[in-house]
Image (cartoon, rainbow, N blue to C red; front, side, top):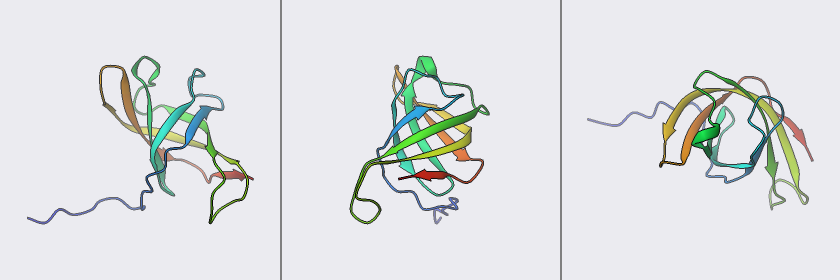
Length: 106
């Protein structure tokens, strides 16, 4: 039986730093596992994980790189946690769906 891809957006394996801009616990930064135009996968300490369904405000730190910017920048956004999974005893993975367009700051 063929495995059907259900994802709507292509994921890029980006490991960017994430910090809070409101509703995300403030002791970050944490790291993304991947980012797409529709959401991101975020790794954070298990003790700081908000429950699935929680809203998040965040800032992604975007390092300078060929093809997008010659200097560091940031992406501000809001999202909702759609899924949470335990990665190890100390870390959880959060699937976050963006709930509004991202704001780029370069």
